[in-house]
Length: 303
Image (cartoon, rainbow, N blue to C red; front, side):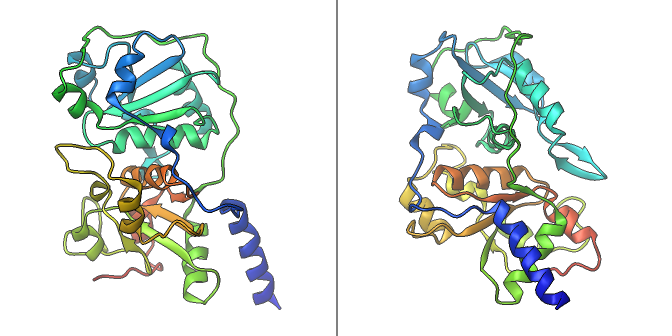
């Protein structure tokens, strides 16, 4: 009886994270904006362009005209000894409000590389329930610079009057729910697709990664390295939706229950964004593998 009660409790909890979908998932084209689209709207007062980086010197040296700076630490910080966790909702809201994001804003995030920092900012805003009008700039800074588009080096001040409407979304899960999902997979309950977004060597256990004492991956996870969703590192444009679905093994006709994770949450955010762009509703295990492998009683697999 206790086992049955546990299963019912488990199913109810997971249902809140993975809502059912009435229609087959369709790509959300509005989640990606081309460099041309952004360039044509420079100076638009309703458009908030956000440059996400660890080092503010990158932004100070050169950025898209009108872009405001958002520090990586604003969306990924150490909490409870686990690096790369989402800050509190209050801290996140304050960070986004400081760069001028309001409920009426159209928001475009970009970063200096292939987009996982920008995707983390998107995920954080989506967690607040405020990303309906947010997108990533496809190609990010490498493409903008290569195309010879306008560049600025003067910082753009934030907007002290901005205010967000917060409605927290349940897609960010912790280690307890992740254990429940692994248990459900191993015991023949409804299947969950676990996506490990790290490089293959880390997933396999051959290259542990920083601060990893038990290399490998969460049992049952499949490996889709986040950079494989891009045309190339030098040309960080998203591959077309058909190729992306094939990469994840998704045919687009059903809405599977998907959880993304990586080492500390950044690469998992890019996988989250990609799957959202494809029309799915994934969850993110924010503590990711660094938290999982620190708990000696939790199993790991190697390949």
